[in-house]
Image (cartoon, rainbow, N blue to C red; front, side, top):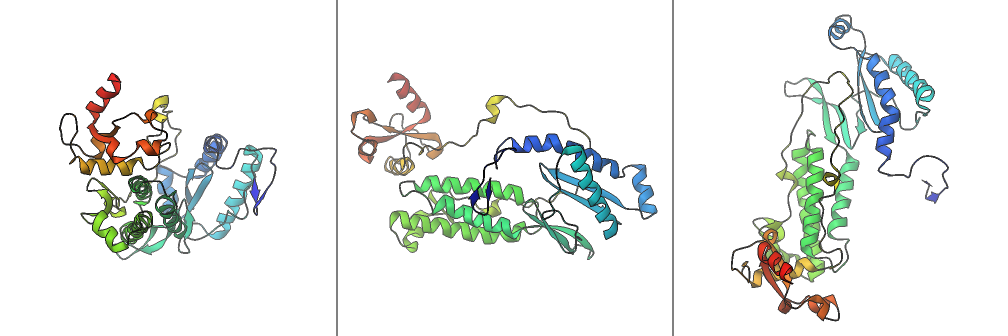
Length: 341
């Protein structure tokens, strides 16, 4: 455990950021779900409390992050419910409610939850409605992350790898935050930031001016190494608002995946051979995007770069990984060559 920059020994709990933490949180806090569910009104009771102006609640929880939403309730009622929750967590779950992280607030004042900023705004009909926006911390984090995968990398890592890694970050972030009301407006700003982060990375790696980078690595309005290997945009993901109403809490049915489906589908060909993608792109352009064996047309995704003389015949991988010693092969021809060898 790290507190104020100092590492302290721990005698209980799990490592910070451990993969087992969400599982344990769901097991322990399942009792809290049922407690809050018992406080909420649904069905016919929902109509009754609405007619009589009585308070009602809904809640949402992701692992150990959760919020309780109250309607037609004053601050006194909210504070009383907070105290009930504190006592229940202590008695039934053995947990203490964090005083610093737990607060009672009004939607008009706004609050942060899971990277989003929830606040009150003007709806399409001119009425005050809840708005889901992207939090400032999330914006700062994605700017830092883009620099980490493009600019702050080992010098031998290829531009193609940086572009593909940045594209993966952009897709993941966009699909998470596309439900925000200001996603479309923010996407344009982030596209500009991602573009120039990549341009600066290419400029530094190849010792080129930004003008020459745009001349050599600009394809159809995007930065990349070829027309089919360019940086994706935040604006490629369309905003998707979800207006479904909350449903009554019910325990879900277990869905268990096979072990192989949990394997991460992220492959880094440069883990042991830095710069491999650079030589592959150069070979593709030299060979006219054709397989040197069968002559079929290929692109980066449908081809492999093959060493004419095996790597083990050279003193180092760098000596073997030259343009004169590599050729472009389609996936089928490369497989046949590998089997024959």
